[in-house]
Length: 160
Image (cartoon, rainbow, N blue to C red; front, side, top):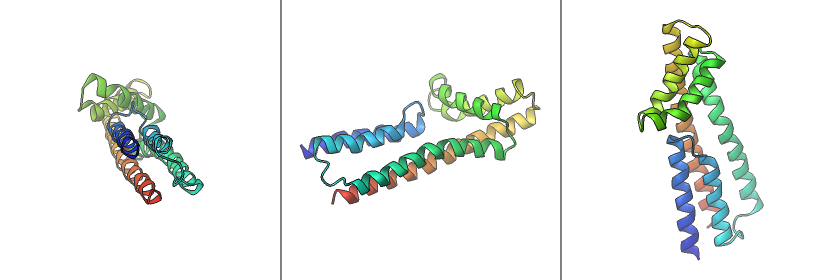
């Protein structure tokens, strides 16, 4: 059963990391599901209350990191709330419209369109906001990736 538990957990972890690139996949939830499924298949004995408290704190941190990174990226480059929403919508739609490149082009174009149409910003400011949205997204992916690796390391430590 240990092998099955590890296979299921690893599959969940891989899906979680794919979710960093395709944000429609809730990466944090798949990562957490890997912990839960491992415990359900193998045993929860080694996954103490301290483990769960630490992981839940990281879970909350991951949810917050995504929002804050996008907000800071757009705001730092002078964008508005409309630019932030446009970026978010572009991030969700982009990968489906333009596979692979859409993950960067989507938020960039979404922020630009929102700034031009809703806030009536000039093209220069709209492009600047678009760049900010991409910087925010890339920062978010990096931070979330590091935090997810730390969560897996904590999981491994508790299993020893």
